[in-house]
Length: 84
Image (cartoon, rainbow, N blue to C red; front, top):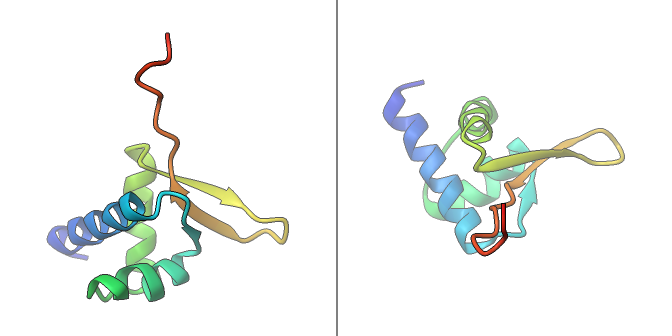
């Protein structure tokens, strides 16, 4: 995947989560619903690569559903007013 396409996917995922901070979905769901709604086409493999980068940057978290599926959503942001 080209770097520019990866960046576009990451930006689109982050933009979607900025508008829908409670949203969670699978890689396939993100490709189908989140990205297509923004006019971005991507395969599940491309979404996977973008999500791995966003997880590394701590912008996205992965959780497992009771049936073992992985879903992705916005990572918890530290509260700026919380004492360290």
